[in-house]
Amino acid sequence: MVTYDQLNNAIPHLAPLPEITPLLAGITARTFVSSLTSPLELLRTTLQSTPVDPLKPHTFSSTLQATRLLVKTDGVKALYRGLGPTLWRDVPFSGIYWTGYEAWKKFFSRTTNLPVPVVAFASGAISGMTSALLTHSFDVTKTRRQALVLSQNGAPVSTFPFMRDLIRTEGVGALFAGLTPRLAKIAPACGILIASYEVRSLLLLFIR
Image (cartoon, rainbow, N blue to C red; front, side, top):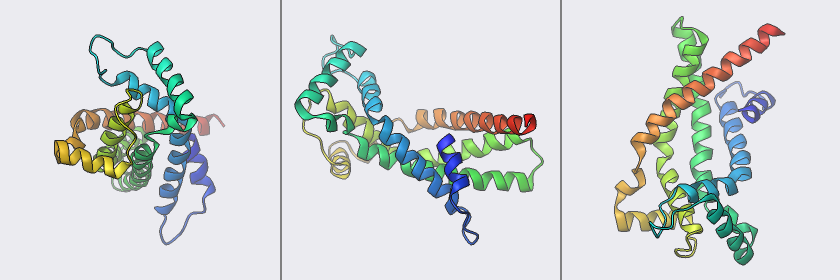
C-alpha cells in the first residue's frame, strides 16, 4: 500500500482518463512486491498443501530441507516457479482493485454522507470481491503449480498449458475451486485494511 501510495502520487494524473493513474500505480506496485516475495509464497503454499504421504505431513523443517535440495539441483530460479500465475493473479487483481476502489470511493463520497471509514470499507470490500472473482482461476493455478514444485511430481509447466491440462482432467469447475471462502475472506480483509489505512492517513494529517 505504501508503494501504491507513492506511485499514485508520482505518476502524472491524466485528465481525460484519471482512472489510469491508480491502474498503473496498482499493477506496478504489485509486480514489484509479488516478484520480491515469490520464494516466501512458494514456501507458504508448500506448507499448506496436502502431502503425498499422509503419514509425512509438511513441516517447516522438511520444507526448508526440500527447498535447499531444489536450489542445489535446479538453481535459485527454482524458487520462482509459480511466479507466472502469481503475477497473472496479483497484477490484474491489484490494477482492478485500486481502479475500482478509487471509483467507488468517489461515487460514495458524492452520493452519500457516510463517514470516511465506512466509505473506505465498502469501496474496498466491493473492489476486493470483484478483483478476486475475475482472477480466481489464476489463484488456483498458482497454488496447484507451486504445490507440485517441492513434491517433485513432474516438471514445471507454463501457466496456460497447465490451466488447459487442469480443465481437461478435472473440468472447468476446477479453476473456481475455493472461490466462496476466498471471497468471504477477501471482502472483509480488503475493507478493514483500506479503512484502517484511510483513518491512519486522516490522523496523520490532523496531527500535522
